[in-house]
Image 1 (cartoon, rainbow, N blue to C red):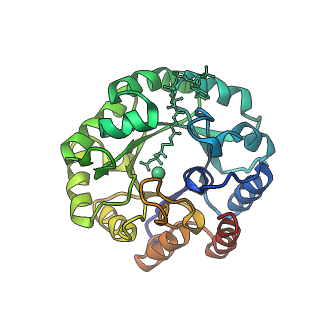
Image 2: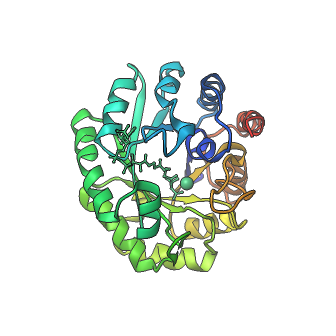
Image 3: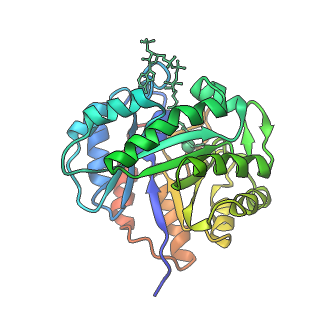
Length: 286
Ligand code: HMG
Ligand code: MG
C-alpha cells in the first residue's frame, strides 16, 4: 500500500490574506465548502488577529458562521494571543472540528514586523492560548516562520530555527509547520535546516510550509520528503503572493503538490478533479 502524505490546505487563510483585495464572506465560504468535499482533512480558514494588521481576515467570525459543517474535516484558525482565543470561542460553531494555530518566527526582525513583539514575548502570549485550547480539547498547531530567510534579518542559521521549534515544543508537543515565509529557500539549505530541527523534534511532528516566491517550493518539498516529512501546507490555485516580493507567486499550489505526490507514489486521499475546480474558483478571486 502506498505511504500517506497529508495535505494541509492554507489557501483560504494564507492565500487570501496575501491577495491585495478583500474577498466577500460568501465567496470565501463557497471556496471552503467546495474544498471540504475534496477529501482534504485540514483546511485553514481564517485568523483571529488584529483587523488593522490583516484586514483580509477581519471577517473570520462571519466565515465560521457561514461554513457548512464537514464531517472528517478539521478547520484551522490562527490565534496569536488570548484576545484572539476569545474571538475564536465566541465564533466557533457546534458540530465543527477546529484546530488553533499559534505562530512564532525564527528571526527577531519578522517577529517585530508580524507580531509587534520579540520572539520571547510571542511565546509568552501564545502559552496561555495553548493552555486554553488544551483545556477546551481543541488541537493546536504551531508555525515557525523564516526557516531559511527573513525579509529583515537575511539568511537564518539552521540552529536558530531548531531553537525556535524547540521553544514551541517546550510549550506543548504540537505539530510544527516550518515556514519558508518568503520562498527563498533552496534544497541544500532546506536540507541543512531540517537536519538541525530533526535533532530537536521528531520528524513525524513536522510539516513543511513552502512559499513559491523563488520557484523552489516543489524542489524543497521533495527534499523534505527525503527527510521523512509527510505533512505539507499548500494553497489551492497557488493563492496569495508575498508582501516582500510584489507579483511573486504565493504558497505552493495544492494541485502541484498533489501531482508531485502522485509522481513519487504517495497517497493523499484528495480528489485532483475537485481541487482543479477549486483552483479555478481561487484564480477568480485574484
Ligand atoms: P499589537 O498592536 O502589538 O497588540 O498587535 P496590542 O495587544 O497592543 O493591541 C492593539 C490593538 O489590537 C488593540 O485594539 C487590541 O484590542 C487589538 P485597540 O485598542 O487599538 O482598538 N488586538 C486584537 N484585535 C483582534 N484580534 C486580536 C487582537 N489582539 C489585539 N487577536 C497582534 C499584536 C498580534 C494583535 C498584531 O500584531 C497582529 O494581529 N498581527 C497579525 C499577525 C498575522 O496575522 N500575520 C499573518 C499570519 S502569520 C503568517 O502568515 C506566516 C505563516 O503563513 C507561516 C509562514 O509562511 O512563515 C503562518
Ligand atoms: Mg505562510
